[in-house]
Amino acid sequence: MSVKVDKIEFAGWKNCVHVSNGIVDIVATLDIGPRIIRYGFAGDANVFCVREEDAGKVGGDEWRNYGGHRLWHSPEVMPRTYSPDNQAVDCQQIQNGIKLVQKPEPWVNMQKEIDVVLSPDSSKVKVIHKITNVGAWAARLAPWSISVMSTGGIEIIPQVKKDTGFLPNRSVVLWPYSKMNDPRVYWGEKYIALRQDPHMKPPFKLGTQNEKGWAAYVNNGQMFVKRYNHMPESEYPDFGASFETYTTDWMIEIETLGPLVDLEPGATVEHVEEWELFHNIHTPGFDEGIFDELASLIEKGM
Image (cartoon, rainbow, N blue to C red; front, side, top):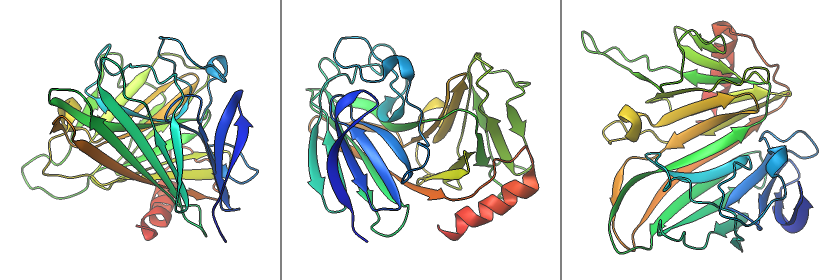
């Protein structure tokens, strides 16, 4: 098989690039971004959510959560983090994929890039995120990649299980609006699970170290797996979280972060994710036995 790249229209955006190997396909917008707006098995459901009220929009000074997959930098502050990505991006074809390059953000003075490399013969995708400081001063930040997933599924997050004796072995980070008795959350022995409920608008967010370096989202007969490298000796934002997740009524976000860096003028920081899709996976309830079976499937590929 081979990887093909062509131009299409998608979700109201006239200029999009389509990357496919006949097994899965990816769509990225060129009118805004960098944003990957679709990933899924060819001819099957999009694992990402596209926000209907923002679909096809371009331009303006207002930040919009279009959905799809985006690149931010942490810690989250207003207005720096919410620099709009409403302008056209440059696209270059690379071996088995594409390179999406944003024009430098005014005032924030950062330039974002996402390289997408699709396996010729499987569902696997390598997503390389880069942030370059084009300003005159160093900035302390962590690269932060965020996938906005479609409604109705269940996210599975492995917990740290190492034996540290009398010392703690993990932490869970919560935001002010997060209620520990939220019925969408399962606090298990080996896993934390989060159910996306389109009928529950109150937001919920948590963060962890996630030393296993993966999370999964099961929905519409597909299991989306995101992998990344957690670095135990590094400093992360948000009380040490390298993994975060957020949900409200119209989506759920699966987020990974790189370590904090002091990014000097002209320097670039990189953060890599690997994605994979599995066929014919039934959306489970809160069942650790089923989570174990899915984890075994996921970890065979690591």
